[in-house]
Image 1: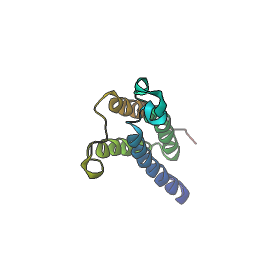
Image 2: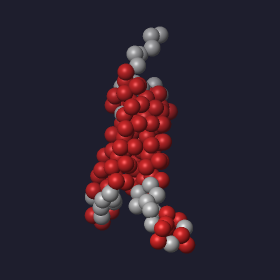
Image 3: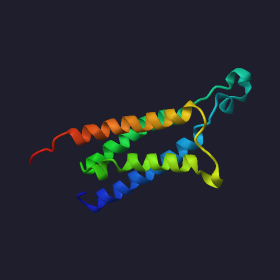
Image 4: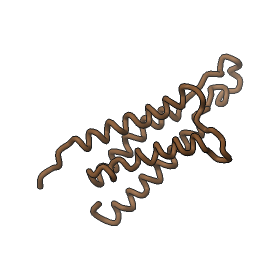
Length: 132
């Protein structure tokens, strides 16, 4: 990292990764009936908006961190911290609650959040450094 501004931006990226993981876990059990109570019995399907949010934000966080440095520890830090937060808080949440749902949405959150971020990280690490 080149400057104090880069270090501060990196810390903001890490805080963002943790906050996104917590928010995505909180909204993982969301169902259509929660948003539209008048829908009735048919509106009881899962609405995993947090899976979509994870799929969109994790590659962006990894790409922004990679812009600061191409070292694995810097570029992959938001992804690793997001994974640790999702698994840690998902299994041992507030008050010992299990926040990861016991269905396909938990697997979807982990896969859709981690896989695109890992692909971006691999692309960054596989790119040869630019010669000045």
